[in-house]
Length: 125
Image (tube, rainbow, N blue to C red):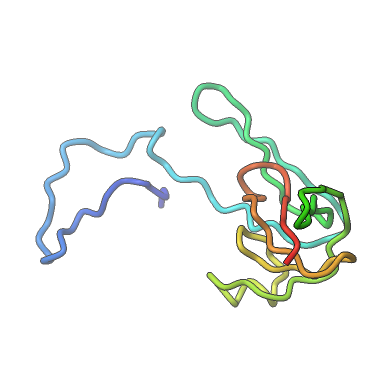
């Protein structure tokens, strides 16, 4: 079954909305990238609306870390320690926005969306 980004067919009360159109290709949702913490780096290029390209990181272990002074450096991620939105992703070592990872510089919170933007950025805690 196709994943759609349309609004629900049901009202809050349980009644139905009468839809006047069927699903369109532009309204279909993509599958999540589920970026893993791994030595092997994998990047997938996906075509999006307008013929543009979106880079999805499937596996990565490098992160751009910004410290309190604003200096940015590239370092290696060691382990996923916390993920407040979904704690089940910690066991699977999946990187999302808001995940706290252990690096050589200390604990870092990811501020970018690895499955959407093609980079992993974070700030030192």
